Length: 383
Image (cartoon, rainbow, N blue to C red; front, top):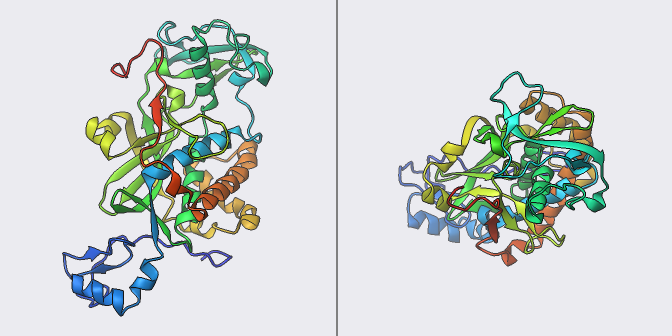
């Protein structure tokens, strides 16, 4: 129980007896609306509905499909990156002097590395540029086209912070769906039983990695595919889903349209949702791309539950949040992270909470607007 009386209601994980008659049976069935009670027979369910008071509680419960809400979450992640609290990426504040064009320029060994196979597309930077000329020929004169230049801008914009964004999203989902509000997450016809952060490797070729040589000669590597974070969801049925907002920078450039979800003119936001259809159409795609080393439930975590506070008090929970993040990252958070994380958390809490309270999801499309931002030399077949 948190300080303001909120309690995180964990979905039922395993039930061994009928709620009404307490009979133990292998064929127990969940209430198909709220999934909070189980019964051994239609008779027991009817009895609880009419006489046990379940009707009063059950009819208040609403469910939102992960497939409906994930483009909204992707849009909020993009907006988090746009907040002025974070330090701009040097690739967005300096001119690009070489030609890291896709399909034309070959990857090179990363300067300073002792491993000749440690290669990436090198982006060389020199003179500072103002934000007004970002994505113009002045910023990158040798780009093959405006489309290539704009995609490079997006890949740099979406570089890094994969742990932070996915964690903040999970944290906000607990607040919006699993406190006192009568609303729950589901996928298709089954409720979400658990969600959290997964950590491991994402398969990336060297031509899809970026590394930056700064004006003083120092090297800043792009996001590390061997140290990647993403969100996992597990349904009550045991189905596993992956939601990832952090792979666009590696040229896995799948995106969703943002217009139905947020008022800000973003146009698109990177997101990959490995749902049932994608897993069916491309068998074993998740095991081909992801190598999971460890996972941490956010929904079931007691520290995260105790940090769910009212918005004005949310900053008081930051020491606990910082410790949780440091334990998972196995390092100390730096000053920049401690500066932007409280703002990201509060922003995500407010926007997700408002959307659920206002039932905005009822206006969102069942099939999200989505696409793939391919390179000029590519086709969907080559991806």
